[in-house]
Length: 414
Image (cartoon, rainbow, N blue to C red; front, side, top):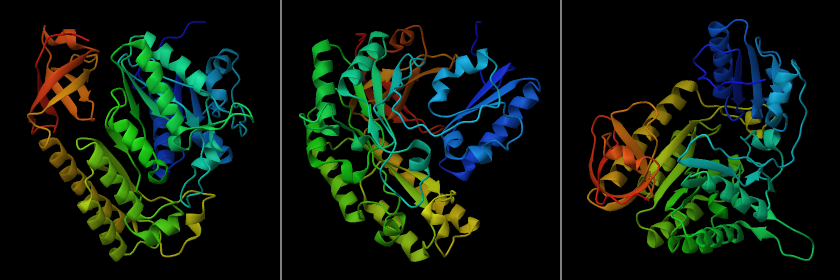
């Protein structure tokens, strides 16, 4: 049986929704997407799969309109479940490692190197949904890197639930391979290919971002200068309630270390506002701590209690109104941080990996090595830049969308 991929907004016989379990908003979004699918085609079959199914099957199974439930193992066999019309499947916990990577985007691919988490942050449902930390072996990771690059893709983003906790042991006589060993192996492997490629890191915990990693990446030509380091709170009291494994002083030390070694690196952060017990004083502590940090942006999350986590039993819950206000304040700060970071890059030379223009846009978009969103006018000349690296000069920030307009400084296509 053949299947044709269509956009989720289009009429379809089967709708697939990959679920998340991190926030209550994810649950509400799932219900919304189910309603959208039913409106498009009341006779369609709807599949829910992924973390929410794994996390709380009993609850998700009560949502009207879903026909198939697949956990994080079963979702890789989705065609079999559809083909044999096994509807109303009851899922179960499965915490093996399942390698995965994407090939649909012809410019950039995500490669999972690790899954699960051994940390017990009091607000987080991920260890319940994804299980204990486990890693793919280096040999398999390098093989998948070759598969991706051989498809013409130019950039790989290393992903996982807690990539800094990467740890693989081949046998009892060989030392464990950690994250630092992995990035060195990847670098040496790409070096042998003698091609221009990029590796980008996804989120990494501050306590796992060792100094040796920062120093190594500062001298590396394949790993780009881009870091995403979750903070969650600028108050040590709240960090303790969250059961995070560091204090804000360590976080600041890591940011300063990066800036000293890689001045133009993009550094993103995560913050949770409205955690139980977060007083106005604690929030101000977070605000002014973020303000003085040399970071590039802040991804702001509003706390939402998840079942089976410790934080839901904490006293002094924060009202929705206060959460919204605090979130708004930090998002304004994030915009200021990003604008400041981008303005400092104007008139500098960067290398942009341009994307495919699949939507007939007036611009061709791409990212610099340090994660600045850029664009050039889409012309008969720039069409040749699709899925290529181009050296450019950053000219100015477009006031309409905040994206930097660039100008190629040479016509060589890589």
